[in-house]
Every structure is written in C-alpha cells, then in structure tokens.
Image (cartoon, rainbow, N blue to C red; front, side, top):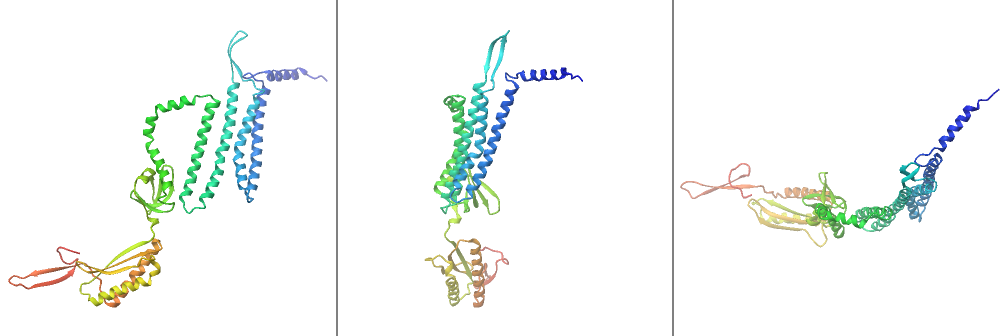
Length: 404
C-alpha cells in the first residue's frame, strides 16, 4: 500500500505560504492576535460589568451603602471602554503600523508610520472612558441635591436639580472634548476660539433670545414667584405650572391645553399667582323691591348676618363678614354682603356659595321679602291735565330708556 504524499505536501506548502503572506505589513498571526486582544478586552469588560452590577444591587439593598452602590454603577460601563483601550494599546507591541507609499527599485523612498495615530486613538478612548465615568458620577451629586431639596416645601427646587445635572454634564462633555483636542491631537484651542470669536457678534445676535431665556430661568429660581403645581396667570395665560426649564415654563390651562411661555417673558411680565391667595373673597349684591318696608329691610339684613355668624368657621379669623344696606339703585334697594372664605379650594367655595344662596332664597321667601328685578317707570302726561300716571312693567315688555 502506497501513500500519496504529494497532495499533503502541497497543502502544507500552500498553508505555509498563506501564513507567511503579509497584509498591510502584518502577518496573519498578528491580525489574529489583534482580534484576540480586542475580543479578550470586550469579554473581560463584560464580565467585570456583570460582577460590578451584581455587587451594586446587593449594596443598594443594604442601608448605609446606597452611595457605594451608586459609585460602582458609575464605574460599570466606562470600565468596558477603558479595558478595550488597554487591549488596543497592547496591540501596539506586536502590530506593524508602517506602510510604504513610494518605492524606487528595492529602496524605500517614502514611508509613513501609523503608530502615533494608533496611540492617539487609544489615549482618546481612555480619556472618553474616564470622562464617561465623571459624567455618570454626577448622579451621586444629584442624589445629594434631591436629598437636600426633599427637606424643603418648595417644589421649584425639585425642578432645579435636573437643570444642575444637565449643566454639569454639559460642562464635562465640553471639558473632555477640549482636553482631547488640545492634549491628544495637539490642536491650537486658543486659535480655534479666536476663530469662533470672529463670528461672535452674529452668534450673539442670533442667540440673544436664548440668553434672555436662560437669565429668565435664573430669575425664576432666585425669586420663586410660583411653585410647581401652582395656578398662575402669565401673559394672559391662566393655567397650572407643570415644568420650568432653561428656555421656557410650561402651563396646563384650565381647558387642558399645554402652553409654553418663554422664561424671558415670565421674568419681564406680571405674574399673578392665584394659588398663593390666602382666601377667596365674595362680594354679593342683593336687590329687594322698593315697596319693602324699613322693618322688612332690617329683617333682611338680620337674616344675612345670622347666616354669616352660623358659618364663622369658614371665614378668615379677624376679618368678619360685612352686611349693610348700601344703595338706592335705579330699580332696587341694595344690600351688600362681603366675606372672605377659607380654605382656598375652589370646589369647596362653590359648594359654600350654593348652600348660602339656597338658604337666602328660602328665608327671604318665608319672610315675604321680594327680590327686585329690572323695571322701568313711565310718566304719561295727558293733554290739558297736570295729572301724571305711573305704570311699572317688566323690563322685557316696555320700550324706553333703562337705568337698570
């Protein structure tokens, strides 16, 4: 029995030739090593992230270790990026980053080394990982701020926390970007900023409304003219404050519509805080007919004062209701009732007024005190006579001038 070794030798020769072949200056084993390093970095990072996540869950469930758990969560994802950058940095030890651009015979005329660019890329990823960690670390600051604002009665402080969080994160992003540009890629940041300054005037004109709204939001948080959930009137818009942002304040109107008011308008217009009123005032004008006798008029005022005294618990302390016979109107004798109702709940106020009106109607009817309605008196002069006759008719039955 004979064995054909020519085929096996041929395959070995072909395999050896492929193994010795280079691509972009690197042998196949170098590319495999690079892939293994990157894959190993990602696997190690994923395993570390899972372990950190489990440890953070156990710490956050224990009293007194919440901040430690939050700190570990800040490390979890950025660590994967840092490990991947370390794996890429280790590849610089066995990868060839030199490639030839021009040759003359066997002599290299011009070559270029990509090693500095590769190392810059590794440093950039490392910086991004550290910056990402600082970015997520702001959540711990947010935790302390929420704990602080939770001790206050103002809900506007709760809206301030997300604004501070967004501002700090924006600062971190800008600082990381400037650090990478200046220290890794060696850009001239001063020249870049000077170049941006050439268009500064145009930008300032375009962004003046944005800046005005930003300062308006600062004014709102400093003065606190309202709280979240307050009913206010701003620039003719009546609604409940739902959110205060950097640019605008959002109101939910009584019709259910969402209205967005720029903060510059809020800061420069009159804000009526309806929710901040200490009481609800009612001024009720009651008209009785002119044929009401003085005795019945005194009885009407007495009834109204008795009704107010029976409801003293619903009025502001130290400010008694006022009931007086006030006017001789064109078509009635006027009695005014003024009271200041507490608490400042609109539905309770309406219910109170309903009961007050029902009792007033019932007791006036029982006493025979008639409510007035608009009337007109016509004087008709007969020819050849000095006698005048009078006639009273309802408002909707006679044409003429009305004083009612």
